[in-house]
Length: 81
Image (cartoon, rainbow, N blue to C red; front, side, top):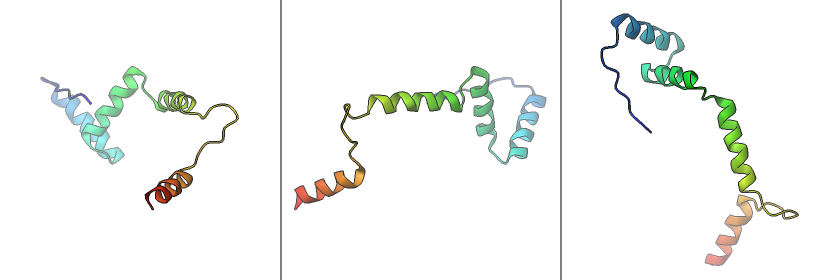
């Protein structure tokens, strides 16, 4: 994650940002992150699409049933004795 420092921010802008954050019950930092993300088009749909791509990349081969975490844990337990 990157850090950004904004210099010479007008006091009225800073006050308005603080008021927005306070009204939403979030931190100033969280409010500014949300505004910046909205400005560049990062939204939940983008994240969802990325997750779908990851899901496709991790799918088991055709015809194979995915192995659940319980089965994996049981196998590890049995192997460890």
